[in-house]
Amino acid sequence: MELYKTKKFYIQFSQLACALLFVLSVFSLYTDYFFSLSVAIFFTIAFFGATQDMAGDGIYLSELSASQQARYVGWQGTFYNVAKLFSNGGMVFLAGVLIPVLGNKEAWAIVLSVYAAIMLVLGFYNSSVLPQQSVIATTSRREVIAKLKDVITSFFKKKNIWAGILFIVLYRFAEGQAIKIMPLFLKAERQAGGLGLTEATVGLMTGIYGTAAFVLGSLAAGYFVSNKGLSRSTLLLLCGFFNIPFIAYAYLASTQTDSLWMIGAAISIEHFGYGFGFIGIILFIMQQIAPGPYQMAHYAFGSAITYFGYTMASMISGAISDAWGYEKFFFWVLLSTIPAFLVSALVPLKKSDTKSEL
Image 1 (cartoon, rainbow, N blue to C red):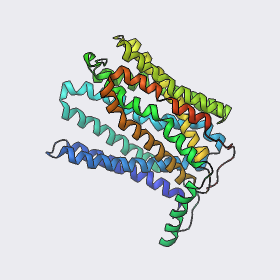
Image 2 (image 1 turned 60 degrees about the horizontal axis):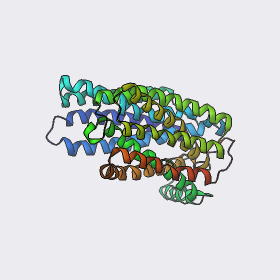
Image 3 (image 1 turned 45 degrees about the horizontal axis):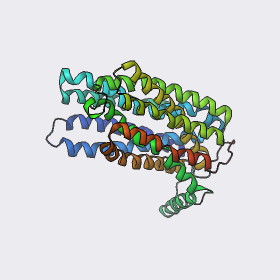
Image 4 (image 1 turned 120 degrees about the vertical axis):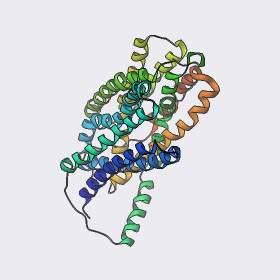
């Protein structure tokens, strides 16, 4: 079984499978069982998406030294999140433009078709650009089970692993709440405490202004960390960039300004900080959690844990927002940043400046 070809296969297969599934989602729009079909289809898309994500990160980890990881982590972080911003911004904007003209069903059919085309192109593109290098011997089923057990147990035996897990969970505690409620706040009626923006305007603000700011923040952070390294002061600075800009939404909720320039500036500031600070958790997982004989698997574990923390925070955000209203909610988000600063100040750090071994 070829190790690098396996990663390449998983990436290609997952992308082509996602293309097919997005096509199926378009057809599901015109059935009487759209909801149940869409839940099943998007669940499967999420599975394949996670698979290609981990395989891609595995190639990144195995090809680059720790210093190179820090140097290019801005680019890695940019492309890691640009799809989410593209979806929440650009594709929402496209849907908002098309719905008044074509209707809801046809508009979303076009949006889903765009996703299918993108995944198809990426699947064929990666067939020629991804590396194919060393091989490992095929093992028996018993050896595979023993290896899997060793992968799991060795992860939890790592030094300071529980402190690292706590850091991963709490670093995104405020973000998980704010990011889920932010688009609802922007579109909610002013009588309900929102800004009353249309879907197209929200897409423009987050998809264009926000994406540009996010990319700049990610790139700036990557070059900053490559020069400074992942130290205590660096991690605290990244945490500050990641969390403090949520004050922009507290300001918007308090003033309910109708100035699109002010709203766009606030969203851009938050997205710049988001892009800059998100590098902190990526680099932490790469250099503090992943190193060792199973770096790809342990990086996947770390990524899964950070999404677990993000999801847990997201799950409580709706109830808090409904109970307190948008203004109080975003001030609560600011208080929710305190755990991130505490773990950033206290989590043990080990220096890593050599290339990790496979």
